[in-house]
Amino acid sequence: MGADFETHLKNAVRFHGHLCGGQVLGVRIAMAGLREMGIENSRGDEGRNLVIFTEIDRCAVDAIISVTGRTPGKRSVKVMDYGKMAATFLDTASGKAVRVSMHPDAQEKITALMQPHMPAKNEKSANIEALKVISEGDLLKIQPVHVAVRPQDLPGESLRSVVCACCGETVRDMRELYCDGKALCRPCAEKTAYYQPIGESA
Ligand SMILES: [Zn+2]
Ligand SMILES: [Zn+2]
Image (tube, rainbow, N blue to C red):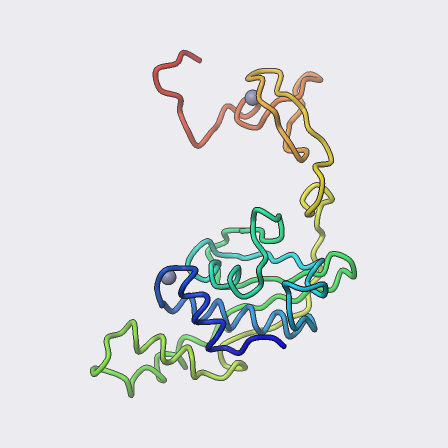
C-alpha cells in the first residue's frame, strides 16, 4: 500500500529539514505523478524504471525524492532547473511519461484560500494550509508527454569513460567533447568552469 498524504509530508519534512510550501507541493506533485503512472510503491519493483525530471532545484525536489525514493545519485532524478514548479515521471521501459505542473491559474485560487487564515497565521503558514486543501484539479495540470532520454543519461553502467587529453581527469558517461580528434572534458574544451583554481598556473 502506498503511504497517505500526511505520512509522505511528515517524511518529506524530516528529509528536507523544515515544513514549507515546497514540501506540500512536492508531495502532491509526486503523489499525482505516481498515481498517473500506476505506481503504488515506487521503491518496489514497479518503480524500477522510473526516472523523474524536476524543473526546479528548490524545496520541492526534496519532497519528490522523499516520496519516490528516486535520487540524482541513482540517476533517477534529473534536475532540469527551468525555475518552474513541475516534474515529469517517465517509465524508461515503456516510454510512458506524464508531466505534472502547477496550474497556471492556481495562484489566484491559492491566494483566495489563504484569506480565512489571515491575519491569525502568517503568510507562510496560510500558504501551506491553502496548498493542502486546494483541489488537485485547481492546483495541478497533468499532461501525457514524450521524453527523448539519451542512453548515456539512463541509470546503470557508464557507457563510456575517457581521459581528458588536457587535464588528465576521467570523464564518464559520454560528457566529453572532441576537438581535433582529442577527447576533452567540458571545462577544458569550452574553457569555462564554475570554479577557478587558486594559486595554480593554467
Ligand atoms: Zn523548504
Ligand atoms: Zn580536462
